[in-house]
Image (cartoon, rainbow, N blue to C red; front, top):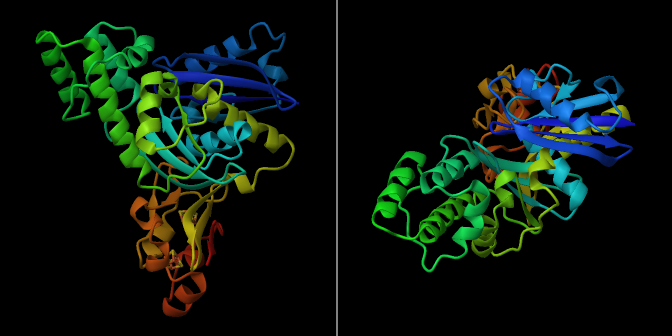
Length: 352
Ligand code: SF4
Ligand code: SF4
């Protein structure tokens, strides 16, 4: 069974080809200005030397921000679901993922089957992303691959007041002109990004085991600081940048096997001493019509980016679902309409 996962990120395109559940080949290349060309180039590189052609691949799942522009993909699935699925292939014990990508950063909770149980993302600015680190490396005249190691040689980290890409860049230039050591500047910036990432993680539950995925997980300076601030040693897989593509390939394999319905559900909520409070959205069924957003008196839903333009439970509602939503049965008695009654796709489930 030959399948492929392709992750078209904002900075890099990643492909994993799997044969019978094992990785046959993989590639990482720059994302070009045209996603379609990038997709063909990346799969071509991954197939090079395998003796296979595109026609030999039985099912392809695309993920990442350019996932809808992969012409040969049979299906596309959000990168959040793919990272959760991909990492549990390596480490089934992982419950918290920090995915540090080219232009955004996500904190994800998942269960042992790689099903997402909660997530938040920061995609509003470039601060703390791969793009940001590229900018800083450029300003300091240091190769991107070297900045992490260099930050670890600092005598003292220079405190940065911001991780806004524009302000941090000009702060870095000022320190450089004052003759401050590049290692100290880098240590300060790494520290600021790690603090910002931990703030994102604190918006979900930080649970053992913890992992970091995405290109920045290859930066030893960042990993060290995150481990210290989170208080957990992250489990790191062979190539953290490939995790999304691996998850996509695993979904492709499960598709061929007729499985994976559960894995394509996004679950939000929590369990505590008083019970389990979960809302589950079936991403296969939801078409993003928005009726549930209108109907819910507690304003629990928003049309989000978790899977294209499908519905998600709002960030702020996830940690207080028991407070906001009385559960479907109680809500039905109180209200003429509710999310279940308006959803024509039967995409919403409550576990109360
Ligand atoms: S009503 Fe159903 S199909 Fe429409 S956005 Fe909500 S969950 Fe999706
Ligand atoms: S059951 Fe009622 S309160 Fe709960 S999410 Fe649905 S519409 Fe909102």
